[in-house]
Length: 483
Image (tube, rainbow, N blue to C red; front, side, top):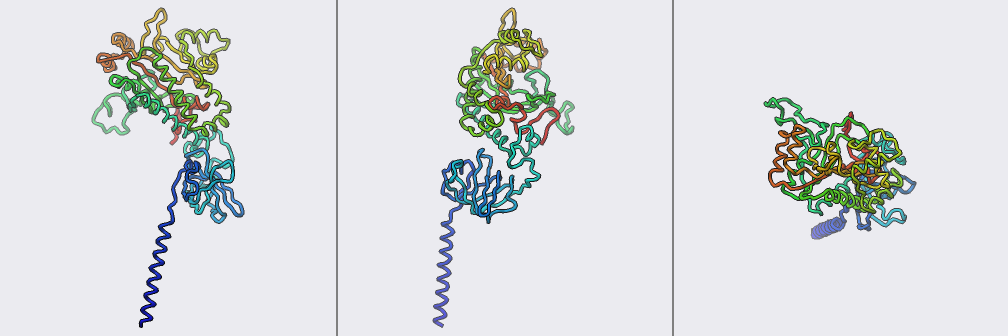
C-alpha cells in the first residue's frame, strides 16, 4: 500500500512539473508583431516574428519552395514571402487575401531589403484569377481600369494615385496650419449660388410628407458650388481661413476636364492690399504641397512619370525652380492676337479666355505657370473688386494657368466698399437675396480676398494625367454615377 501511495505521489509530481514546463514554454513563445507591409520593408523589425495581412500580387511555386508577393496598400513595393512548398494552397492566387506569419529576415537579393520566411499562410478571401478583370503580368491602361471603379484600387497605378492624393491633401492642410489659417467646415447644402452661373443641383426631400408647401427647408436649396461666401462670413472674425471639401456643378459635359463632383481648396485672407497678397499664397501653397508629395511619395510619383506620362518629372521640377510669371488680361489678349495660331474662340478684349487660349499662354511663357490678372468687369461675379480704371473697366481678379491643365486657381479681391457692392447687386437683381452679404460690409468690413484651387486639376498638373476622371476615386459626371 505504501508503494502504491509513493507511485501516485511521483506521478502527480511529474504531471505538475510537466504542466509548469508547458506553461513556461507558452509564456516564452512570442506573439507575432502585426506590421503593415511598408513597416516590414523598412527592416526595423528584422529578426522578429511578425504577421502581415494583404493581397497576393504574384505567386510562384517551385518543387521545394513557394514565393509570394503581398501588398496591403501601404506602399507601392510588395513584401516577398518565402515558404516551403508544403504551405502551398490552390486558393493562393493572384488577388486573394492572405494572412502570413513568420520570421522577417534580410533578403539575399539586392532588389528587396527583407523577406518573410513564412511559418503559416492563411487564405482569408479567395479570388478567381480567370474572372478577375486584372491579370497578373499585364500593365493595364487608365482608360481600361476606369471601367471598374469598384476594383481599380487593386491596381498599382490607381493605388499609387490614391496614396499621392492622400499625401497631397495632408500637405495642403499642413501648409495652411503652419501659416496660421483656421479650417472652416463650410456647408454642402446651401441657398446661395456663389458663381451665379445657374449650374446647380437642387436638393429636395425624397418624401413629400412635410407639412410645409414650400419644401423641406422652406427655401430653394442646392449642393454647393463653392464655399467662398461662407468663408467671407468667417473672414469678419478670423484673418485667414480656408476650407477643403466637395463641390458640385450640374455641367452637362463628359469631357476630360469636367466632373459633376470634385474637391476644392478655398482660402480667404483679410486685410489684403493687393492681388500680390493672394498670388503669394497660391504660389507658396503649390510649391509646398508639390515638394512634400515628391519627397514623401517618390516611388508612387515615379510610377506615373516613368510609365504613364514619361518625362513629366522634368516639367514639374521646372515649375518649382523660379517664380511664376505674371501678366495682365490685356497683355494676354495682345499675345493671343499677335500669335500665328488659329483659335476656335475669339480673342477680342472682353472675351473670356478659353482652354485653348490658356494653354497657348502657358506655352508662350515656356510651359511655366502664369498668373493672369485684372479681368474685364463684365466677366467676373458681383463680389469681384472694381478697379475703377478707364477706359477699359477691370476687376482685381486673378487666374493661375498651369501646363497641361489651363486654369488651376481662380480668385479676386472682394468688393468691400458698400456703395459699389450695393450698386452691383442692384444691377444684377440680387440686392434682396444678398442683403446678409451687404451686412458684412456694414459691420466692421475690411479689405479681403480669396481664391479656389481645383484639387483634381492640381493632381493632373503634377502627375501629367490627361483625364480628370483618373485622379478621383469615384468620378461623377453627366450620365454616369457608378456605385
